[in-house]
Amino acid sequence: MNCLLCADVHLKEAEKAYCLFVLNELVFLCEREKCGALFFAGDVFDSRPDAEALRGDFRACLDRLSPDVRVFFLPGNHEELRASGMPALESLDFGRARLLSEKPFSFEVLDGSSELLALPFQKDYSDYRSWEVPPKTGALRILLAHGTVPGITYTGPEEDDDGGVLDADIFAYFGADLAALGHLHGHSVTAFGKTCVAYPGSARVWREGEAGPRQVLVFSTDKMPPRPRPLALAAAGEYRVVPVYAAPGGDLRGPDEKEMAGWKAADWLRLEVSGVVEDEVPVMDALREMQAGLKKKFRRVTQSAENLSVLQGISSHPLARRFLEKWEKDAGRYSASGDAYFLARLKGLAAIKEILEGKK
Image (cartoon, rainbow, N blue to C red):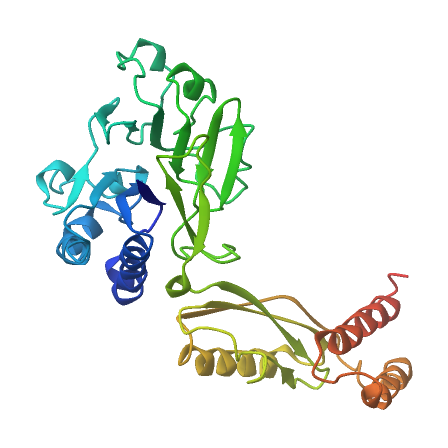
């Protein structure tokens, strides 16, 4: 049986159209790959209010699956966010999706040769040796969980410090052949002993810095050891850092139509302006105007001016003027549309600024 594993969809009412676009692609891929099971490894919804608001759309989307496809919804830490005063997760109807919220675990047989051990998000899993988990009888045991595994995947400074740390020994202790995990937004498939530890990563671009294509994983319960393979999610778009170069007089060079030809409307752009300028105010005004124009084409556009510096009079200084004359003269030798050419101006002026300010 083929299975599709996804995680961290973070369905959010404020981004409903985009989120449902991604969810529909998950359903499409599940059908295309002829999967018999679809696993959501936590953080299906961005918060408890989002779960209440979007459960009907979630149900409707899953109803497009073939009748024999089984859907499993493991709660993550975000299903508990802003839950005060809200209905219990178990009181909400998620349609085709079987809610695996029982703590510390739930267990069931998937087919004749595979079984599922599900661990909903918990801040502390340290008492796992006291759990009365049935002994392994199938050829394949899948451990579905939402948390971090120290020593296997680098969590990075952007990860929330909210517990949910899984001792890697838990996989061998329960005889897991495949650990299908959510919580980390980066894709990772590694081996720990006899267990394949697989993170599909976030199914959509949820926050800044989540670079690279968003993915799901497909694996077969008929193959041992399990070998999950990634499938890219076109609907999720990508996070793109877009360099914007400022000339000393304030003119900006941003992405042109040719550069943006392969970008998608679902992309998240971060405009990073850099340069040494005479006056920061018109530069920032121009950057905001560029940002507003790009917002009409792309899902989200943010900006940063951390690498923009100001030095009044730099354009008229003899050293800077000679450098800029040389830079402009060499335009015919290099591609004026290439980042390297504009980066050379930035580096040169930055060095001159340090000289003029007495730093060298």
